[in-house]
Length: 194
Image (cartoon, rainbow, N blue to C red; front, side, top):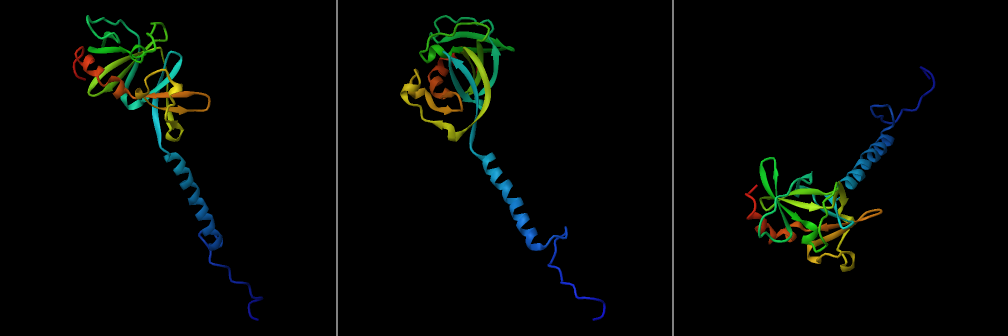
């Protein structure tokens, strides 16, 4: 035996010097994990702006909301429908303000430090929604949204598109297009197009 004892020929090796079979298993599991994480991240969700009316939390699609402002002076408009509080001047634009609480038959928003105007853009118009208070912007998985049982809410079921069940709270999702469907025409008479 010239050159000493025979040494076993190593398996084909990867760049790191690890055996190829082990390397393949490692790469497979390495690339599989992010795929599972991506599926979780891609889970359908809705981004909502939430606010309060009569101590209940409501949510609307964030894409409809332009901004949330503090209550300013509202100028009343003669012979406007009772749920239209009047108009405000928002940086030079005249915007009608709807008392959303009154529109939904929940009473009337009492103006205080918590009162806010949620400025929405719907059907090419800017409209202000007077609410008891703003809450937050949050992402809600679609899997947590269910149809609202009639007992859950005091408002007309036609205006509710579902209820999001989160850990310690329920958020009533309202359909602004239905709520403002006919009212947008009334509000349109008070303000120019956006």
